[in-house]
Every structure is written in structure tokens, then in C-alpha cells.
Length: 420
Ligand SMILES: NC(=O)c1ccc[n+]([C@@H]2O[C@H](COP(=O)([O-])OP(=O)(O)OC[C@H]3O[C@@H](n4cnc5c(N)ncnc54)[C@H](O)[C@@H]3O)[C@@H](O)[C@H]2O)c1
Image (cartoon, rainbow, N blue to C red; front, side):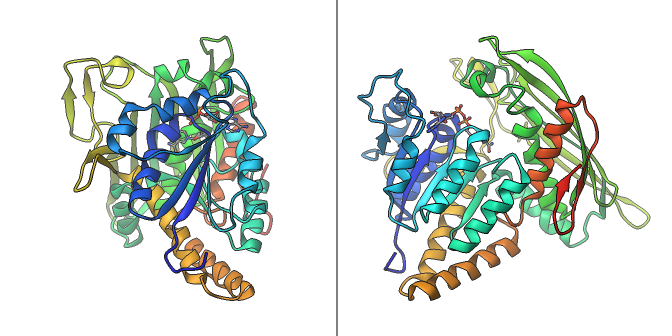
């Protein structure tokens, strides 16, 4: 990184749904605005890469843009390359960006690998499934002066940002009782999820409940101290057993309670694309306050002529807020929404860190980057291993609880935060 505004080369690891729906189109747009230089994608095998490369939607939105696939599109579709990402990351010049977008239980190894090769990391949530691993990642990132941003995009939803500011100004009182839900569509059961979303690896609370737990922490600054999660098991079409539904209760350090319901079962025929929202009641002086976010029906409904909505539906609640490709001043379409804002915010922060350290001698550059990381941690807007590891504690507690039929699991803070 020599000049002050150098673009970042990006390698995305994982070519699945989140890469298609959010990461790649966001990075394509950042490529044309000059934040990102080359884009490579490494997947387990060639079929998802082929689908991304041939996507009509991307060709229309980002004419003339593309990515380098690993493995090559010519490799036999059934041939697997579980270790290929190691070579691809090792071949990157230092100070660029690795995007981790593979199944949750693989994040730890890949994030570490990227840091050991001096890369900055954007990791989809959850960072890792164990708090101890998050602590190690934080240490490694701090030592090397490399940035790890966890892509909790709900933080970038304008309503979350407004609520965070209002809460910090005392406009609502103290959070006391709340309810969050996020029910993903039924059709998810037919996706690649059936291969990894199994009881021993994850569950709906861990997969999506964490978004709202993170959001309550983001809005209030309160830490969760106890978690209890009950799961409802079922089978995927391929026969794998999974928790298809979950019901969680999170207790916060001030005694507040949050119910969290999650599942893979929002009806395909319903007006989707999923069901989600948050209600938080707060105690004030002589009155109560309320935060209510309907994240499901944001006031826009379309009835299409063809069944092009999620799950093949015609009538849909459409969210213009998360991610949409829309006309802009340039060629094709541009992404808008808090999903894009989150990816762009994390990527631009890495670029800014590199710019601030550019031209300094290696030791001074490292010190500058380390100082920059501490500032991002303290600001608390972008989730980092240092400022969001309550999420790992919650996930760890939730996994323990759901595997033990909703046993309450406590989170203990102090010098060595842990669950018990
Ligand atoms: N709202 C969100 O923030 C959100 C939404 C969806 C997914 N996610 C997260 O994104 C991650 C991936 O989810 P998804 O829905 O895209 O899953 P997916 O099953 O659709 O895709 C997983 C991808 O990982 C790749 N992969 C697996 N092993 C690999 C290996 N050894 N080397 C290279 N690639 C490998 C597969 O090829 C596949 O392309 C998960 O951690 C999930 O929790 C976050």
C-alpha cells in the first residue's frame, strides 16, 4: 500500500447465497467507485462460481465486470477443493481484504489464515461460535494491525442508528421487556442449508437470532447475562435432522428480558420475504417508553404479474431498505440499502486505515494501524472482535442451552468472560 487512496484487492471465500444476494454486488459497485480493485471468489467447487459468473442480473447491473474463480469454471462440478482457499489467500499481497462467507463453523480457521497472511477481514456474522476463538482473533488482528469487521448489517439500518442515538440521549428510558422475531422462508430448507444447518453445527437462534441480540446490545449498550433456548427439531428434504425452529430468552445485565423466536418456515406463499421485527419496552420516570420496528412490512407492497417474488409468490411486502439494485447515474444498476451500506462502510474503513499508514516506515505504520483499530473498536458502529464479542458469548451459551433442552446458561464477565 503505497499511495494514499489505494484500492483493495478482494478475495471472497464462499460462493453461496450471501455472496450472491449481498456481497458480490456490493463489491462490484465498490469496484466501479474505485474502492475495490480485483475481485476473486473461492468456493468449495465450481457450480456456484459458474452460477455467479453467468448471472444475468449481475451482467445487467454491472456490465463488463467480473471476478476470478477458484477453482476454475472448467473444473468438474463434482470435484471438491476444501483447502484451495489457503493457496489463494497466501498468494495475496499484504494489506488487502478477505471476505469470509462460508458456513459458520468454518469461519475461525479461515479468518485466522487470512490474518496470518496479513489480510484485513470482512466476516459475515457470526464471527465464530466460541468466545475464546474471538479473543484469539482479536489478539492476532491487534498484533498485526489488521482490521476484522463483522458484517452485522442490521446495525446500518437507519432505524437502528436512529434508535441507538435516541436511546443514548435518554429518549426512551431503560430497556426492560422485549420481543424479537426473524423467521426465514420455508424454501431455505431446500437449499445448501440441508448440508450444514444440522443440530450439531447450528440452529435458528444462532443463525439469525443473533442479529436481534446484537441489535439490542447496539441500541442500549446493555450486556446479556443469561440465555436459554428451546429448539424444535425436524428434517430437511435430504433427511438431515436440524432445529427448524427455536425460542430463546435473553436476560440483560439490568434484569431486562428479550424473547427471540426464529425458524426456517415463513410460508413461501406469504407476502415475505420473511417475518421480522423488534419491540422494546422501556421504563422511564413516571412513564414508559417504546421502540417498535416492523422490519417485515416496511410499507411497500407489490403484486407481480409473474411469481417472481421469494418462494415464487406474486404478492409481496418489498423492503427497499436492505438491498435493491436501482437505476443510478452510471451504467447498469447500483446497490442501495443497509446491506450495501454495511459492506461499503467496512471496506471503506479498511481503505482508510491503509491510507493513514501509507508511506510510514513499517513499525510506525503498524503502530498507526493499531491506533486506528482501537478507535474503530471504541466507536462501536462497526462490529469488531473487541467490541462485539458478547455475540460469541451469547452463541456459545445458546448452543449449550439448546443441546441441553433449554437449560439456562449464564454469561460471566470480568477478566475472562465465559459461559457456565
Ligand atoms: N443476514 C446475514 O448476515 C447472513 C445471511 C445469510 C448468510 N449469512 C452467513 O453467511 C455464511 C454463508 O451462508 P450462505 O447462506 O451463503 O451459505 P451457502 O450454504 O449458500 O454457501 C456456503 C458457501 O461456502 C462454500 N464453502 C464451503 N466450504 C468451503 C471451503 N472449504 N472452501 C471454500 N468455500 C467453501 C460453498 O462452496 C458455498 O458456496 C454463513 O456464515 C451465514 O451465517 C449471513
